Length: 517
Image 1 (cartoon, rainbow, N blue to C red):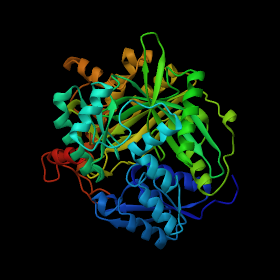
Image 2 (cartoon, helix red, strand yellow):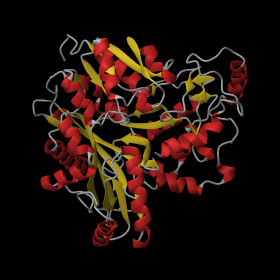
Image 3 (cartoon, rainbow, N blue to C red):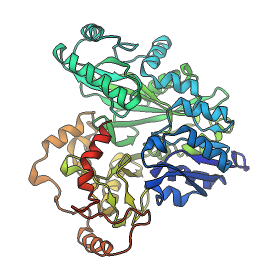
């Protein structure tokens, strides 16, 4: 890359750990960063870390992080010459990329045309059909009626999945075991898709039972160069949300990686894709050991799990995104990409795995972070910060790297033992269970792994249910009591008292409803 910064100032249209991640990259590149924040994020870590910060409205995402007009107006006000969208919120909305183009602000991501094509699952499937890419059997266009849904399902065979054309994050999806279930599932999927994406279009895919979910990272510049950067195994999921990711996949050998990578590049070229993107596949393993993979969808943005790819490739994807957006050529060729070692990531959420994953917003009374060789913690939290209830409860990502998978897993378990978040509940204990599970150790993963593991749980085998996490529970309880008597939080939300007016538990039903949208 050139010594001169490719941009003078970048606005990050996001919050949480991904905003902090991009701000750090900007600092490394000598670029000023601009944070935006809602009323409840006034004291958030990304606001503290950025060069400048601007309020963009109320807590509701539609009034702040999803408001394109305010994002563009703020970028102009701050003098930003580029916008990085992070992931979630507006990151896959072509309207933001188009608004940036109209305002002569560089959007750090693909073109709005590529996003428009791949953002619609049905248009993407039609493009892949034309390009000869193998995809899961089903309809390549939106369903026009219940009768059509029944006809397509009958042709591909039950069970099937009804999915939102504009979908993501498991929303607008319903599994249908037989024709009797179709009417209610069709109506529910359409309704949920309309609420979540303002688009009721749905389509049908054959339900591949208990597949593996493996994705390929691609990266393209604006000069026609497009490469793949290996795969990520993302099979450990809960309600279609990834929980643990790793690279490389335990089942992908060099030949399978090459074949999947070449298909992913074909997908990218068919979409006219530039910048960082991810092509997702479902993989099933036949009784004879043959591994088949099918195109699932493309994510036109940086993925949450991008750090595992950064570890095994030695590349900084955010730096490369910025360079590509500035018009630079990729600084390497496909044959230069080599995977080394193994990386595993777990997503740390403010939720309680022992109480059906109820969200757990509130003040972080005590925070102890892991460290040491091969440990990376991408975080958006700090001690004294109050986790708001308005947004996704992702707090941080813990990633470890080592020469082998077993060593990376051992390092992750050690890091988890050092990790403590006091004052709220987190899912840290869940990862220790996963890492010790025989199927995880053996690399026998599938999208049904976590549901089976949770079903196997016995009450006596669960971690202590009270307030014990890691090896610091007693210390944390004392610290929490002390903090409770101290001053209000930095972001002005004040302490959270169990059963009090601001009790997180009184808000869980509301949060659950929000997350179901």
